[in-house]
Length: 273
Image 1 (tube, rainbow, N blue to C red):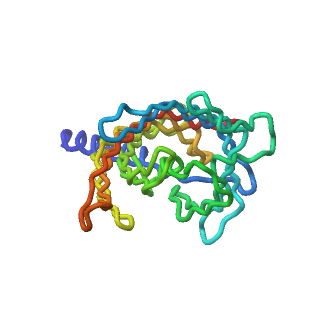
Image 2 (cartoon, rainbow, N blue to C red):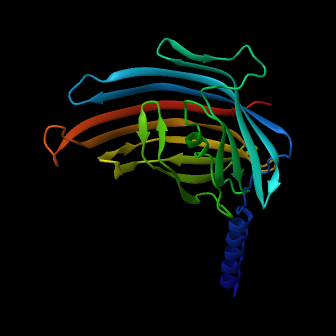
């Protein structure tokens, strides 16, 4: 009987601890209030074809990103995303510098209207003002929370194919791990060791894409306020493209054209209070 009571106590304590650590994480964008974040994206990229020496470029980007919740419609937040005070430098060339203006909107980073649910899933993205850089993929790294999590909970997220000035980037896949409390915030880690294999066709050109995504990072989320506090990490991509283009001299024949793109970008997304 004594052993039975001890076992029962152990089971009860284990069950209590397990359920006590279960939590639900949701976003709570305050209505008609602006959340402000400082964004830094720095690193290198390269582009090469055939046996050419890679053309390498350095990227240094810094800007403020405003998230304004315009309200809710059918259970979705209507979030306007605007970049201001941006400075974008590639090698030694300044592509944009609006750091002296309080109101000027970036012409390089598009202004977006996002429809987002409370778990963080983006249901629709509308471009309000076009830019030269597709920033939506970086927003796709924000965690889309399961209905409940406990320390060790894992889930998978995908970022659809997108374009950067260096070229088209195929669909990327990441694993997210909820690690539990970190001070006053919740900590989530994301990582990837994705092997990329994809074939697409645009008009008369077939493209075979191979490569690897070895990105990783961490996210801190304030569960009481329902807002992301900080996200930082590395986007490491090595992507090979084999284009099959029609041979202008031989009808029905194709010529292989190889292209390789490498990206090694450090990013920091930090709330400004």
